[in-house]
Image 1 (tube, helix red, strand yellow):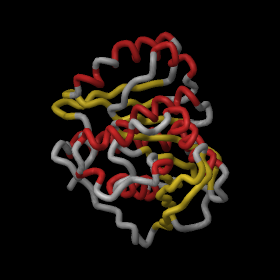
Image 2: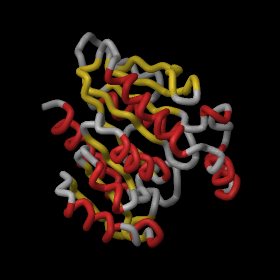
Image 3: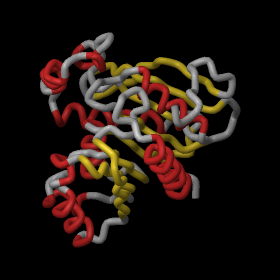
Image 4: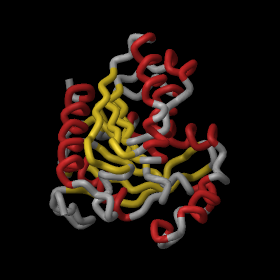
Length: 243
């Protein structure tokens, strides 16, 4: 295990499962923040294709320990929420569930999470977003569709269409795995469009890693790469959201 797991009962944090109003109605989410009265920036944490599993909730708590309000919405809320054990299912079963989601409704549900953090009593009003795998692709779409995020960190996410890239107003820190052919095929066109549109971006490629290398509950976890990507991510959020 490459980090110290942050339990739900960590005495330094206020942690709760909440609901907020989204495009499709109430959206369930895991919320964490440091205890105290300080006003802090926020970070939306977007799940992998496996939904809002314990790993993603724990990532949100890690983010909170770094000095942020963190919210991890359940993307599957419109379908009744993430089923128990979804991360143990065959990928085909998971895809069939995710495909039932409406793309635009999903984007709006996560923009509503940004608004929740932006207007939270303990918020400075600055909000970033990070996501993994399916959530990395959604992070890119949020950068395209919402000018309100002040920083975005997609992990091995599907790239937006090149013609949509000029709509991005959000600084991007982009992580990729070296052994991830399907996703990486989209990098050259994405990077060319980012450069052409003069977007503030950085791309990092992690050698000898596979898609999903950050997830320490899976065999593809790569401790060294995960630690480095985490440090870069938190430094980026502190730079863009705390200054």
